[in-house]
Length: 145
Image 1: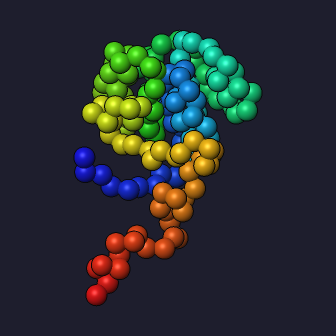
Image 2 (image 1 turned 90 degrees about the vertical axis):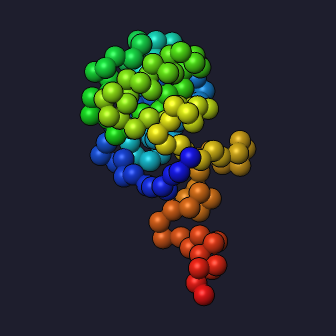
């Protein structure tokens, strides 16, 4: 897959998270750390979701995905734990022209977020995944001469 490393300023945008799995909750936490408003759509409730709701201000829509949920969102993460539901959500996002990332499904994803090893950090640090105002990529020295 060809990809372009990019950083989005989400501080004034809303991101959609579809699903109630641990992966969905992890994506919501990551989005919150990036400053995004979070719209969470899932019919299920879990201890992870309860903890997330206590920790963060989130627009929780306790039901299956509706096309209206995709209105005016910058991007969408899908992690329902159900292959068919993930596929439907990815199709809906694309129909609404919303970039989508489906957990563990690169074939359905427009973008991906680097993983962070469990126990190493609660969230990725920019110096671990690259980012603005950091040293050049290690391969830059090969092109310097």
